[in-house]
Length: 251
Ligand code: 13P
Image 1 (cartoon, rainbow, N blue to C red):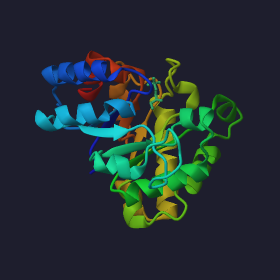
Image 2: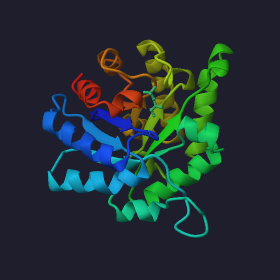
Image 3: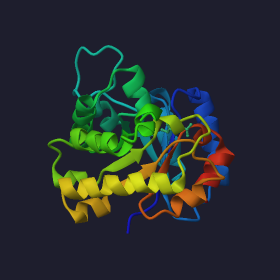
Image 4: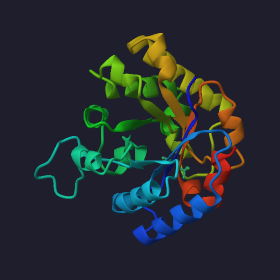
């Protein structure tokens, strides 16, 4: 059985001071009635502060970064390496978010390098895929997303792939208030799982967790989580509101 996995992607929101206030408020009201795995992905500058509070207060929440470079170290001004995240004992790293692809020229090839670098440094990748509106309206969404899966997983060993999380985030549903219907989201997540079964094996596909992301909120999470191939959510806007994020976790 795959454990439900709800992650909050804060994107470029909250200062390190606001992040501290968030985690303290969150802890105060924290319940986890569905026994989900939970991960918070703040900006880099808040990783250490949040990690210290989570460890000190034994809050059962994982911590993730929103991006990283694939190289160990070197002349890459402004970048953060997998080794640096490993040294901070970070659990997860979001790789290839559509905003990284759109604004920072990330490609399936760089996503592939980053996914492999994450596993090589004991970081678990949350690998993002998803189509834009034009692709969906042209009826090419599935081909496009499955192409992303194939290219982003190129050369990744099967024993590592089993620990992968895929986040299916249709770009047209991100930050727009427009959610994919739970049936459409499940259809894509199911196609992704079949693709992974074809690339590796049925057993590996069954262990990969697939999250849906795109305008997830307290009012639509229950239906999304009732779908057989949706194992969790990657939550943007609603994850920086303590009440909303807790309501989502306790769907
Ligand atoms: P929203 O939940 O704000 O639509 O963002 C989704 C997302 O991009 C999570 O990574």
